Length: 240
Image (cartoon, rainbow, N blue to C red; front, side):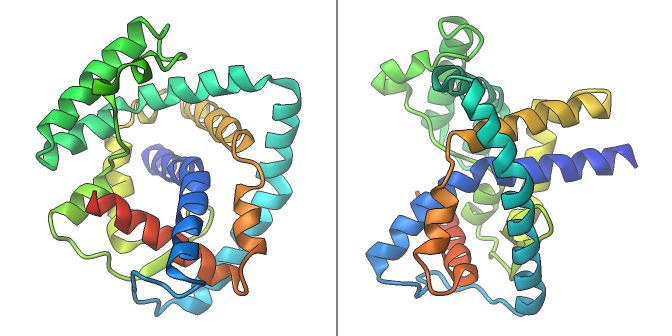
């Protein structure tokens, strides 16, 4: 039972941490394509359920996640919060490295490996993104969902999970793969893993405050806007 609880926790955090990225990048893609019309169509037969979960997740975000993140940002300087973000990204090296290899991107895997070594040593355990000073050590976002897409696995239907947020059948399985590769998943006892992941979520949210709200406020139907933003962002990652 504890294993399933830990899996659920990691899935929640993975999505929340990426929330600012897909909201802002996907939102920009929507503007370029013109309005809320989706470029990447995915079936949404569970729309009544999805809309209910969308409302529930928004309630949690605005009533819990955002207030805590704002308070945290008020007392912790941005350079320190950026350092924490760098640390957790460096810690997620296994997810990106393994998926680079599985996709046959051997040069990318090599860059990821050397970037990890540089940040872990010169970057004081990853708190400083020292590798960004070297153009040849550029790294990219890679995860199991993208790997499944590269292998030709279709997205399946769109689904909004309670707390987990927007996803597809393919990405839901992908989250499970990321869980296996994520070092934080193996932190024991479970309350300590929960604390570490919760801190990462709060820290990440504090660095992207109001980005999600901007997407909601600029759309006629926030549910459709978020769905399109998520799907377009995920599709663009698979295409790269």
